[in-house]
Image (cartoon, rainbow, N blue to C red; front, side, top):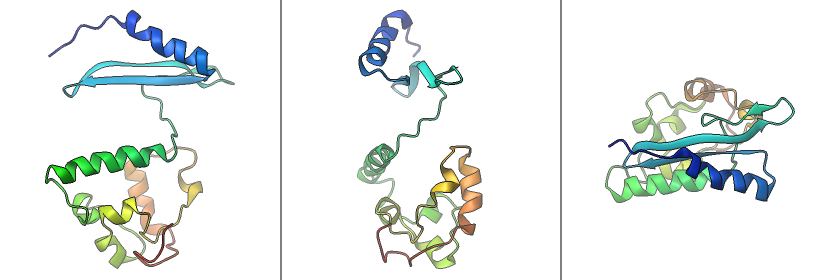
Length: 153
């Protein structure tokens, strides 16, 4: 299904939102039945360098991703496609931590509960100059500070 969309009408609300909230930029993407209907950036992703926001700009939205991720996983659990105690290694075979036991046994519930033994290591990801392959390559080199399921981190 290819929906015809008049972007000029859809552009009004995000532009007003930027003005009202005095935000530097935002991106909006709308999907319908798994088809991209609308996707556009507004304002700036970097004000000092006048770099415009695009639909592909990565947004560091902090802990908000936890609610998106846990909701999506809960939907998959509800559909019977996953279980909370499914091993991450079963889903992502490349997943490895410094501890081989933790690598094999860390589950979805462990990841969502921050009880993998892996502390924040903020400086590894702070600049968002990475992709998932890069992260999976670096994970086995990061020090763990607790055993699996021993503490919230």
